[in-house]
Amino acid sequence: MDLVNVEYQPSGGAPEEPIYHVPGGKADCGTVGGWYYDDPDHPRQIIFCDSTCATVQASTDGKVTVTYGCETVIAPPE
Image (tube, rainbow, N blue to C red; front, side, top):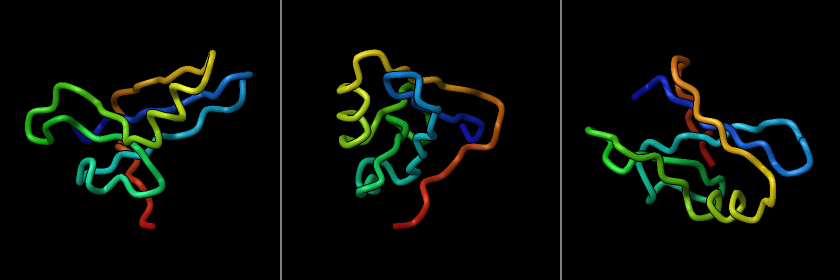
């Protein structure tokens, strides 16, 4: 669970950017956005914060990559 990262590459081939993990779930999404697990103790799904979801869905040819094996990047404090 602590070795998962998510990155987003916007449309047009722009560089990938991290989507930060918000360990507290939806309540901690804030303005930065990010992702969280459906169940932190027994995760089955990665869920995007509302603002992150809107950004990703607005892209016509962007892509999301999930990588395993590196320490999870946590959202910076606001």
